[in-house]
Structures are given as structure tokens and as C-alpha cells.
Amino acid sequence: MRDQANPSAATKSARKSTTNDKNLDDLFEHALKDIFYAEKKILKALPKMIKAAQDPDLQEGLESHRMETEGHVSKLEEIFALLGKPPKAVKCEAIEGILSESEEVLQEFGKSKACDAAIIFSGQAVEHYEITRYGSMHAWAISLGMDEAADLLESILNEEKAADEKLSELAESRINFAAEEEDEAAGDVEEAA
Ligand SMILES: [Fe+2]
Ligand SMILES: [Fe+2]
Image (cartoon, rainbow, N blue to C red; front, top):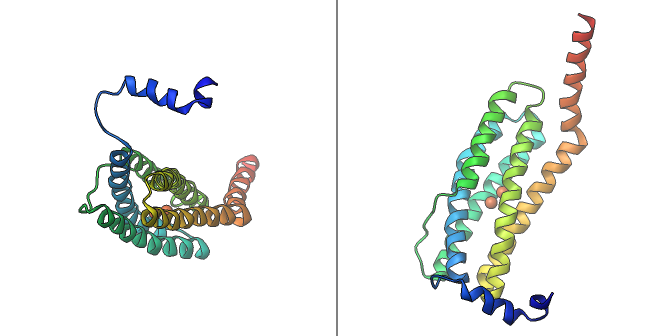
């Protein structure tokens, strides 16, 4: 409570334990390299999901987000340029994990009626990951007075949020029901047998 009322006291006590001179600029640059890696990985993973999708609207939504993702890579390159640095990727373990799980799920459910629900399940994990990263980076860019970068990050963040909402709409309007219908039919067969 005392620290909240007196942020400079909190900062001073935090500074006591620092062991190097890394700061928010460095953290921003690290996050930029990390999300740059992630976006490029996502671009490679999306075609497989698009091909596997059964619902035409899901397929179209994923394809349009694939094109937006190409724009995200370009916008990140613009931010590197604003920093006066060449675009560089740093391996992001989080997206590696999300995408390798997504492949496993697709292998298990890709040929089932739950295929589209499984694609949305993985797709939303990706979008939520991106939303957390772009949310932090957008706030940091504002704190660092990087207005142009903040605008670029906000525009990406808005597209990630819209993509996530589109997936929720598709899931809740029909895809989850379609996946459930198959389960019920299979259940009926089992009961009859
Ligand atoms: Fe993205
Ligand atoms: Fe995305």
C-alpha cells in the first residue's frame, strides 16, 4: 500500500536488487525480436490450418488473417527501422509450444467432425498469445515516447483482437454445435450396439 502511494520508493527498492543496466528499451527490443520470430512461425503454420478447415467461413477468415499476418511482419520490420536496427528474430519458446500442440491436436482431430473446433481451439491460443505480447509492447511504446511504433502496435493489436472475436463468433454460432452433433450420433450408435 505504501509502495503504491509512493512509486519512487518502490522503484528505489527495486533498483537495489538490479545486477545489470538493462532497461525498458532493452526489454522492448527483446520482445520485438520475440514476436517477429512468432509472426514468421505463424505465417508458416497457417496454410496447414487453412487447408484442413472444413467450414468455408472459417477457411476464409483464416486466409484473411494470414494476409494480415504478412502485414504484421512488415509493420514489425518498420518498427525495427524506427529503432535503427536490422530486423532480427529471437526464438520464442511460447509460440513453439503453442504451434507444436496445435499440430498434435490437428493430427488427432483433423479427420473428425470436431476438426474446425480443434482449429479454432489452436487458433485462439495463438491470437491470445499475440494479444498479450502486443498489449505489453503497445503500453511500453507509449511509456517510451515511441508514438509511431505505438500506432503500428495498436493497429496490429486491433487485428489480433478482431481475429480472435471472429473465431469466437464462428465457434459459438455453429462450429461447436456441428462438432457436438457428431458426438451425439456416435453416442447413439454406441447405445444401440
Ligand atoms: Fe499477428
Ligand atoms: Fe494473429
